[in-house]
Every structure is written in structure tokens, then in C-alpha cells.
Length: 419
Image 1 (tube, rainbow, N blue to C red):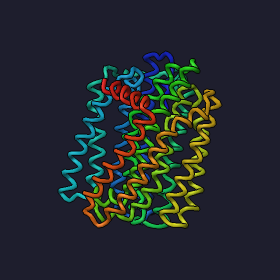
Image 2 (cartoon, one colour):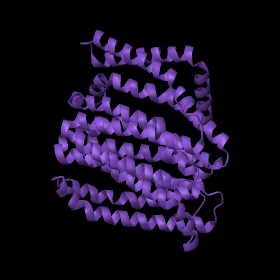
Image 3 (cartoon, helix red, strand yellow):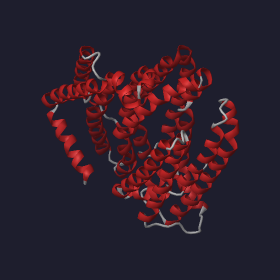
Image 4 (tube, rainbow, N blue to C red):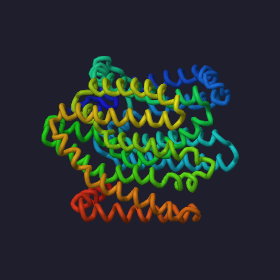
């Protein structure tokens, strides 16, 4: 929460940065100790003794993360995303190499643990080498209070999201066991990769950009429309295409043993699409100085997801996935209405931006499904390649003829991101 407060404030002093650093370090240490304390109870809850040592190692995660919060916030505030990308890339490469080496060495789940911890550690080292700010041994309660008054709502929203949005997996693991949870988690992870690719980078720039124009409603509305125009062009075909190709994609990418994850992937694609189209809504509310409103929305969504998960799990993994998707669609509509009231943009115009991508994606999915039926029995790799090629051809062709100007905007954005 303090990092977001540093980004959103119009002016910050040295004492704001120092106070935020030491407060975050204290929280990181406390979370690390809490993880150590909860390792055994969590293992008992799942009747899985192998979980305890894994959680003990993961106790390092919040401590390492707390050491990078302020530096990241200052770089984001200054829009220095090239340096942040370098830091993330270095960590991902180092962690990936270690994880792959350990996996091939037969280390099992420990390869994943090492991959994430090495990723975090290397990224931290690179960040401290890049950032020119260093904390002083000073803490100002007054300056901390300035930040905490805003940041508490951000903190609370993040905590509610981190805990509440695990409700589906907690419920599934408890009622149906580790095997079904594994199939469901693979579906979630595959979709999370696409979600991170589509929304991850953009999410980090929403607060600093909209914070700079928070007093200019016309520019805020123009930014929201631009985001909708570009996001619908990318996210709708991405998740519709993923759902259409999942029966072939998962066996090719992960192996035939994960065939049971296909249906969950297809259903959860709806939830991921809803998330990607609305991920920036809450961040815009925060940038406009309404973090308390965002906290209320996140809390309501978390409670709703927990309740619907308890209902959906009675119908198995597919029922749970359907409950999660329904909840995400519901709160997409809720957040859209709330943001409309805050910013005053036209909902009809906002939704109209998605018309061309929706129609093109439906045509694409129909073509892919028909081709899949025609190629049934062919080698999966060949079938997947043909489906992807046809899907790109259909979607690209329709968008080119119906929304050529939008493609130009997307190319312009790509050039800007490259710079």
C-alpha cells in the first residue's frame, strides 16, 4: 500500500521514502515469520506433510520482496520501465535456468521453489544496482502517517485479494483432494501466463499514468476509451482462441496426462477474459484517489467468490470453474458501473469498442472448431499448427477490413512500448 501511495502522491519527500522502506521491511519480516509458523498447520490441513518444508523456504519470499518495494515504486513513478523490465528479465532468466536444471535433475517440486526464490533474489540484486536511491536509518511517524492514510486501503485490498481469491483452490483442495486441485491449478496457470502477457505490463503503468492526469476528467475518459479499444482487440481473441484450441493445445504443450484440465481451461477462459478487460478499473479508482472504494469492491468480490465456490464445488471441478467465471463476469459489470459514475464516460460507447473483436473472435472460434473436427486423428502438433494459422487468418482478416484504424493504434502502441 505504501508503494502505491508513493506513486500517487503529487509530491514526496525523502522522509516519505525512508519511512516506507523500513515499514515494508518490518511487514516482510513479519510475514516471513508468520509463514514459518503456519507451515505445519497448513500441511496438516491438507494432510500433506511435504508442504511444510516448502512453506518454510517460501518464508524468504516476503522478506526479499519487501527490500525492493520502494525502489520499484520510485522507478514506476518516474516511468523508468526499461530498468524495471531489465530487472524482471534477469530474475526470470536466472530462476528459469535453475528451475529447469533442478527439474531435469529429478528434484521435483523443489525445482519450482528454487526457481521462484532465485528469481526474486537476482531481481533484487539487479534492482539495487539500477536504482540510485538508498534508504537512510531514519523513520518519521508523521510522513509514514501521510502515506498510510492512503496506503492502508490499498494494503487491505491487496490482502483481501491475496487471501479471498484463493477461496476456489482452498475449497477444491479440501473437498476434492490434491489430484483434482492439480488439474485445476494447471488450467489456472496456463491462463495466468496469457493474462500476464496481456495485462501484466499494462497493469504496472496504470496508477502512475492516471495519477498524473487525475484532475483532468476528459483526459481520464479518453485514456479509458483507448485502453478498452486496445484491450478488446488483444484479449478477446486471445482467450476465445485459447478455449477453442485447448483440447489440442494442452496435450501438445503439457502432455496427454493433463487432458483432464481441458474443460477447466475452457471455462476459466471466461473469467480470465473478464479480468483482463477490467484489471485496470480498480487501479484507475486508486489513481483518482478512491482506494477505499476499490477496497469495498474487492472485499465484496472475494466474499462472493468464496460463497459461489462452496456451491460450485458440489458439481466438481467444472462446477467450481463455472462459479469463478460467473463471479468475475458479475463484478466486471459492477466495476464498470462504479467507474462510470466516478469518471462519467459513456457505457454504451465503452461497450461498442468491443463489437468488432467479439464478432471476429466468434467467427475465428467457429472456424477452428470445424477444422478440429475435420483434422481429427491427425498428429496433435500438426492439428494445433493448422488451428492457430486458421484462427489468426480469420481474426486478422476480419479486423483488418472492419477495424483497420484500431490496428494502426495497436502498432503505434507497440512502437511506443519498444521505445
